[in-house]
Length: 183
Image (cartoon, rainbow, N blue to C red; front, side):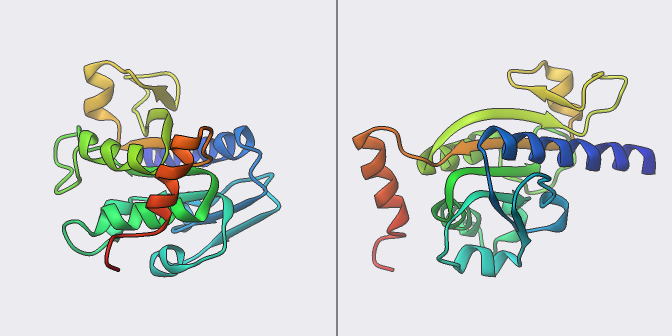
């Protein structure tokens, strides 16, 4: 079993590195050591989830490991992801337990997670990680994926581009950046 976990850790590390390289991320913030290995970045900081969501300085890439489980309250994870997106100048990488895998407990389903991520930016990449070798020869399988991959992958990864490209996108992201109404 430890071999599978090491393979999963390596897949996460390589995926974070590929996203950091693709976005030219020089500064990276992560809410867990498992999510914070972005070799090549000039600065990688791992901070507690509360400090990450509450901070004001912006960085190129924000990496979150299992945000739905880290935030308190039923709707807390949605606000937590919005707060993380406000910190990300280029991209937000969300690594979460795969809700399509049986036995994942109270993880929000993929549709709920995607809805929140589309509100804070554009989901550019959607992948499954942590697959047994019998299912896939690669550590990362891009979506859309077959039913077997969706049911056995341990991790679901989303890359959200947070840099607005159009005037309408800039307005929407300014609204999200302002935080919840009445707060």
